[in-house]
Amino acid sequence: MTTQAGQACSATFSAPRGTAAHPPRAGGVFAPPLLRALGLLLGLFAFVGSSAAQSAAPVASSSTAAPAAQPEKSRMWMTIGERRFAFTLANTEAARAFASMMPLTIYMPDLNSNEKHAKLPRSLPTSTTRPGTIRSGDLMLYGSDTLVVFYLTFDSAYSYTRLGSVDDPADLAQALGKGTARITFTKR
Image 1: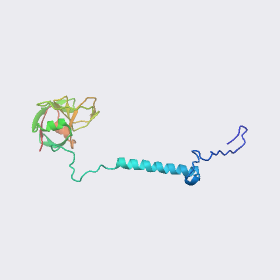
Image 2: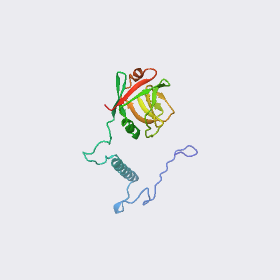
Image 3: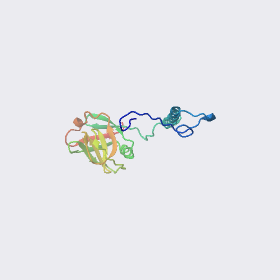
Image 4: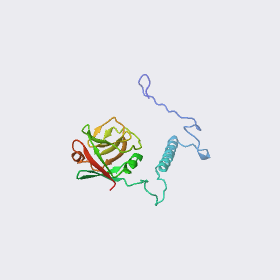
């Protein structure tokens, strides 16, 4: 410390015995403040560590537990001319309803030079979200009855229900071509 005149001065402050700074230990002997702080810190680490371990511990399950229930296989096929593309269904009620329509052959005209679309034979359940970015190979439901196959990646403010996505969409745009495409959706 320095005084107003700039001279050095030393001051030692000591808390009275028996206060929070110097609590009594067992047997009436006082613990030094540094040891007390260290003990509190170690206790805190032990408490936080045990809480984290409990929350991170896996939930006990039997080794015979089945994976997430999927009423049907999630791998489907989309055929465009001579090209066949595997696609994976989303885990949604709409995707399962779409799979129940297969085999399905549908003519899909082009829209906006980035998607093919067509009205389905019946409405499907919806659970719309705004994906923000549409990816090449996304299969979506617009409204409750319009199937959309996207073949370019772009940003969109529209809302869709996810049906699935093409596993490898690298040649999808070329296979779909310009204009209307005849697409067959099958389970095998």
